[in-house]
Length: 538
Ligand SMILES: Nc1ncnc2c1ncn2[C@@H]1O[C@H](COP(=O)(O)OP(=O)(O)OP(=O)(O)O)[C@@H](O)[C@H]1O
Ligand SMILES: [Mg+2]
Image: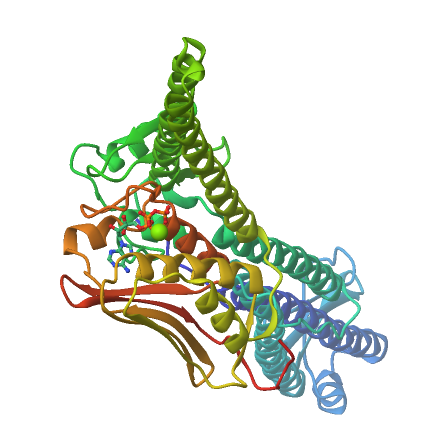
């Protein structure tokens, strides 16, 4: 039940009115009683003087004349007098004075309609003045109450604005009274609050910016499982357009995110962790931080482990592949040495044959070491490759000159002579060399073209051949380390295109592969915003 609101102007006004009316009534009654008494005592005094005069002059014969002379009625009461006495009627119209007269009593009765009229007039005037004073009192009271109410109301409105988070409207204090002091203190409080609030807002914005930049997903959720905040990464990992005010979603089948969060609201909840596998490929780590004693939201941190797991797997595969590749020539070398030691070295033909084995395998080891080094360099380049304006045509020419295609295969260059791009020369050359070698290796007839051109600021560098092409299955894996196609080159390690991919990543570019079995292959390196206008020396 809500209590009825009675404004201060009403009860204060009513109090003023009661006070004014009461004091007016008291004043009026006091005033009229006093003036009535003054009139009456004056009239009584006159009546007594008349009676005394009459008693001094009266004889039994001149009583009538004397009465006329004094304008009173006179009579002699045979009863002896007990002393002088005056009485008057309530309205002051008649006064009776009795004085001793030769052992009897002389009674003088004077009629005073003037006194009665004067008392009536005075009472009427006093009443009117009283009513006027009363009305003025009530009006002034109401006005004062209104004024006080108005000032209180201003303060109340200001407090209400503060409660609604408006710290901008200033309060004015004109009068130096208690209300003025209250308003002044209120204004100080408002400024202090505004300062603190701005500070908190600034901190909050900074925190949000920081959270947006985090690599982990961060979501805060209230008791009703409504999202209070979610950063970009959280939206990506939860796979929904999550905004403040949305219900927390249930994005995964095998794991209830909402139950996980609900448990964090238990009074004795502690830090919670979970590992989620939304599907075969993806993995997530969840950390739930329970609500603080004073807070009403819990924090969830989501960490995408997919990339990390994939990297770890690739790393393991890489090491085992590298070990395998190293072991094969080493086994051959060791076997050959053993055979030589066992006596083959005595036989010149045998010796030469095994030495040739050793030489070939050693060369293969050297090439493998070289390729692994190139891969490592391309990886390292990813950290911060030095990009500089480079003219492309000389690089293409150098690579083309070193290619050893089969007989009947021509190597061509198509490149505007002045075309320059902002690249790292070593990385681009390494990539082109590997692409060129692949093209030369897999092309039996026709041509190999090394091409560079620009569209807008985008520079494209590509190697095209009319070779055997690749199946779509091969295309899917060619950039994996140690992958070799079905029609493999026995000398290859399957590292060439992995090196290309790494180098292109380091150059901030992307690769497009276009190949059809029996028709040929084109591998294109796309470098966005790489073109530089000025002509630079190679
Ligand atoms: N131009 C091409 N035409 C047809 N197949 C190709 C071409 N380039 C690459 N391939 C296929 O892709 C596979 C991987 O190529 P990649 O360059 O990574 O390794 P590789 O050439 O076999 O060995 P490496 O380059 O390490 O000496 C090759 O084994 C081949 O099957
Ligand atoms: Mg290769």
